[in-house]
Amino acid sequence: MTIFEKIIAREIPSSIVFENDAYIAFKDINPKAPVHVLVVPKKVSSRLDEITQLEMGELFFTASLVARERLNLSDYRLAINVGEGAGQIVFHTHVHILGGWVARSADAHHDDMGEA
Image (cartoon, rainbow, N blue to C red; front, side):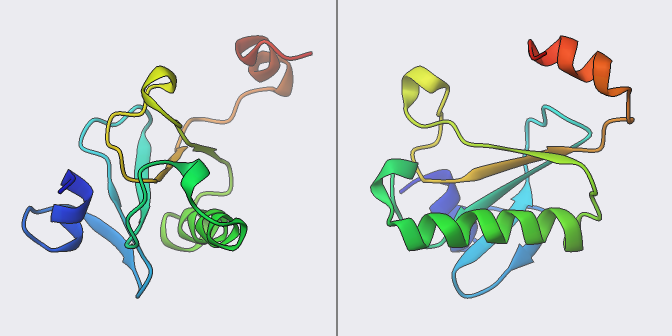
């Protein structure tokens, strides 16, 4: 049983910001941004590439909904690590919502992201 399954089952505490029949969203215990929340499907799968196209769409829709309506973020990043080599630590599909940074100029952001 993963730590996420234990959170879903209320076996360990978490700071839940959203929950419905299919998903739960809670604050990351090791945040990488001023706002860092995980959106986790209650249906267990190990990695993003194990879920259906419909489930993937619902997961991203839910993450966007949580970011905008529960976290009041107008700007945010959605991130998914797929597999150990990509940095996945908990093997239960989930999306990271990262946000809360102070807005900067577009040029500064592109330089940081290696984009032109």
